[in-house]
Length: 182
Image (cartoon, rainbow, N blue to C red):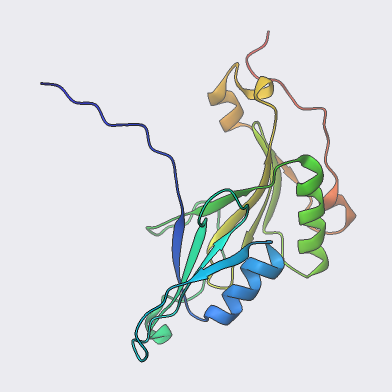
């Protein structure tokens, strides 16, 4: 008998963090998540785990866990698009509309969050930043499917590098290239 796996979707992500107060501030005040829960454990267990969501339609999107001994954490290194180490390269956070995304990146810039990369992919327009533990975060909005559905590979391979600072980093061109049309 042959079996085939079901089709999954990503439900949530759990991150170990060095300083949960600093990470809580970043994920709520910088990225707009709301804390929606906290793990209830026996007093003295040493576990601090908090849950966050970006929209109210499900239980949580991200959880943060305070490391018991932050001194054992890897050194925080500047995030790179293609790091030379194992693990997650980045987390992509989508904002529902172009306008919401533009407001979000303006907020990040106003709060002094460094844009490590600013660019347009063939299927998203994106800003890459890092959280307090050095995890890469892609802040994006999805382009309409008719832009990329004709040739997903070409859209995935396309990248237009844009300015990372100043007003130029907040500009967004809606003259999207369309992939797969002759």
